[in-house]
Length: 159
Image (cartoon, rainbow, N blue to C red; front, side, top):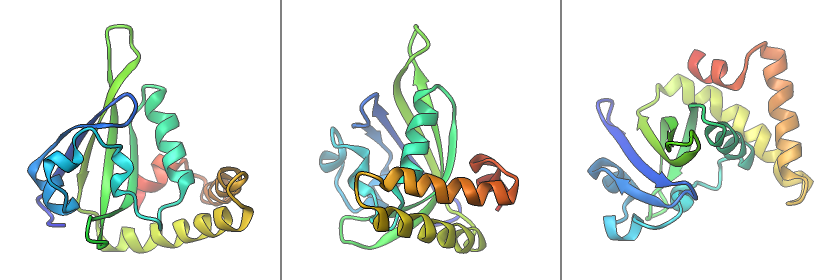
């Protein structure tokens, strides 16, 4: 990803893509027609812990913004890292009617740091089996954050 790029996408409340800018199309390797109406997880890389996305969804569904480092997978199987800023789009009743995500190029040293954390979370998820994966990943993440004395957002914004 280039340092001046911003990848932008919007989804409906169920996570289906309703808008994607040309840079998103370029890096994903999909056409706009292949992306619109699809679940945003079409670009989810298998190296990303489920725990991270659960935290993201819980946060934005509650009406708050969320920051995360995310490894995305292109259509051809290659990948790219982003620093994502996800925000809920609220309706007149104050409930999310969709979500906007703006992603930019992360610093390499931030990726090195977050990648080692994600590897530990992912290992715990895989070792515990599908039913207990989220709880196992959350335990690893929460233990790490407790030792750091930071929330997930503080960790992401500090590295």
